[in-house]
Image 1: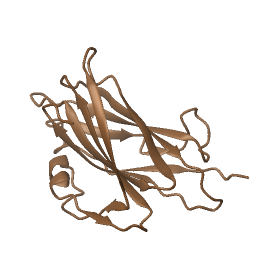
Image 2: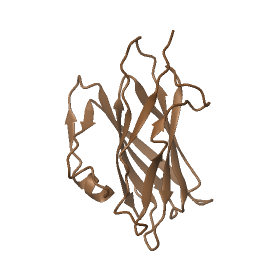
Image 3: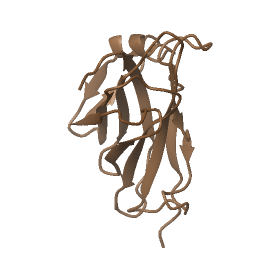
Image 4: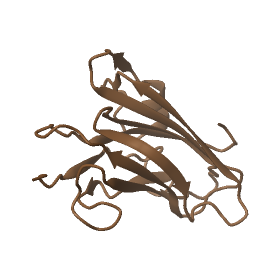
Length: 183
């Protein structure tokens, strides 16, 4: 019998720059996912979705984000990304997912701040063929300035692994905004 999986999506609350409404924000919803995309308990082979919700700041247009997620490479894998209602109708969108097996984010006081720019500037990674970890680096691009709403939905598959496998979380490591089109 397959035990219920409680799938944690760890949220390091990422404010793209400082908070207090003066700068754009990007939050991961939910920060703990306990159900699959159909609302049932998470089991091997299921799909789990997380959303990135964007809140605009006056006078600071944003069109694109650079995002890093870390996860166990044999247990959890990204399926796809779809854009949400933060991209106004008629806007063109695209994304690129660069997959780095064996890498993991090396946390420090300089790259776990509320500043996406600083976290990106001080991002540091380790590598080992046997780490069991991987990084998904995603460039998500819109041709128009974003508005408040769901920026994107990212789906991950919980892979079929041996009984007793110790699942770990998906970690949202950083987000950096750009006002132009990149990717």
